[in-house]
Image (cartoon, rainbow, N blue to C red):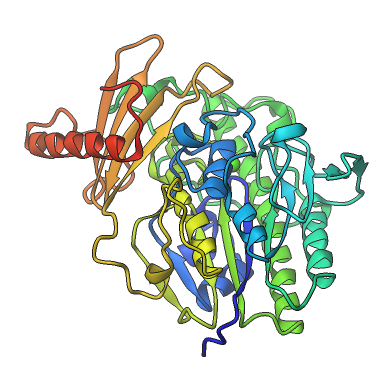
Length: 458
Ligand code: CA
C-alpha cells in the first residue's frame, strides 16, 4: 500500500553493460542473479533506448532530461553544470543527494558535479584497481581496492549516515564493465569454459551502407594487447586469432559484470536489513548497450540494436507490481522526469523527456510515443571511424542516415526488425519498402522538428 511518503531513489548505472549480458534479458553467456532480482520484484524494460550511444552524452541526457544538441554534450566534451538537472531539483525539494563513481562530465569549476550534498568521483575514465577519486574538497585520494567494491562501499556508508527524516537520491555510477575490462582477482576463475559466439560474429558487412565495413572496432583486428592482456599467440590464423580474442574479451568483460552484480546484491541486502526496501525506487541500467562480438565488434556508437538498447530494471514495491516486462519506448531523456515525478515534482519545460511512471504501472498514456530520434556525432575524434549518423526507430523499422562520411557518400539504411532482427540486410533500396521509406523520412523530419535539432538536414 502506498504510504504517502516520498520514496528514496537509488539509481545504479554501469558503463557499457549490454542487456544481452544479463540473464533476465535472456543472456546465454552469464548469470546476473541480483540484477534479475530487481526485475523479478519489479519491471524489466524491453524497449529502453539511449538517444546517443556513447558514454558522456548519455550521462548528460540522464541528468538533464535533454538531447545532446540541447544540453551541449554531443561528443566527449565537458558538461556545463549550471543548467538544470534532476539532482538539483531534488536537492531543492529537500532530498539528500549524492553521487559516487564515474562522472566523466569534466573536472573543475562549472564541470564539477552540482546538486549533490556529497560527491566523490573518478577522474575521467578512472581505474579499476586502486583508483584515484576526487570530491568537493578537490583533493585527490587513492583508495586501495577494486573500483566496483569501493563505489558500493561509498554508497552504503553514505546511506548509513543519512538523515532518516528526509528522502534521498543516490547515483551509484560504476566504471565497470568499460574497456579495458580489468576484473577483480577473485573472479579470475570464472568463465573459463568456452563462451558461445554470437550468430553475427562473422558478419561480412555486405548489403549495408559502407559505414559498418569502415568502422574500426573489430574483434581481433582492432584490439590492442592491453585489451586482451596477452600477446597474440604464435601460429594462429587471423580467424583463429579473432576467436581467441573473443574469448579473452568476453572472459574479462563478464568478470567485470559479475562484480557489478555482486555489489548490487550488497545494495539490495542493505535495503532489506535497514527496512528501506518498500519505500525505495531502485534502478539498474547502463549508459548504453555494447557489441559483444555482435557484427564482429566490440564498442557501441551505432544505432544498431546492441548498442542502442539500454538494460533497465526497476523495483518500487509500494507502487510497481512484481514480475512485469514493459515494451513501451522509453528513452534516457525520460529518466530525469521520472525521478522528479516520484518526488512529486513537475517536469520543467526545458526537459525534453517525459515521466514513464504510468508505464511502469502498466498504464501507458494513450499518446505515449511510438517512434524516437537518435543521433551520434563523434567521427574522426577517436571515434573508431564510425560515421556520424541520425535516424528514427519505430516498433518495427529503423531508418539511419549517415551524414558525415569522410571519405564516402552520404548513405541510408533501412532495417525491417521483424524480418531481420539482427540487422544484416538494409532494405532501403528495395522497391517493396518505398512507402515505408517515405513514411519514415516524414517521421524523421517531424521528430527533428519536435526536439529542435535542425543541423545537417538530409
Ligand atoms: Ca558507456
